[in-house]
Length: 56
Image (tube, rainbow, N blue to C red; front, side, top):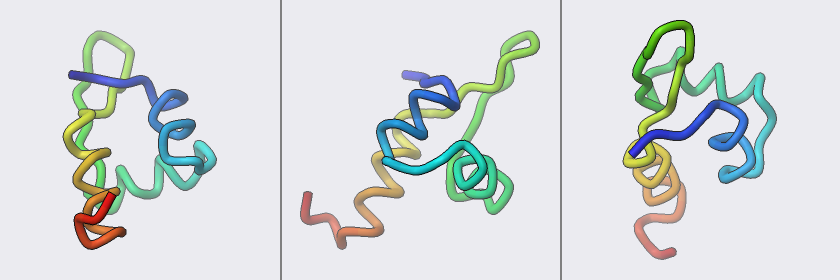
């Protein structure tokens, strides 16, 4: 499953700049389809699990 940068930012409660920073750091995985960059939802979940120690 994929999410737009905007939706990923909203889901994480962070701004677009920080979202792009996390992508650049390799902490969020992306897929390029045409001109769109989409974030893999699994990587969003993994980021949240890592930040909460798996206790969501």
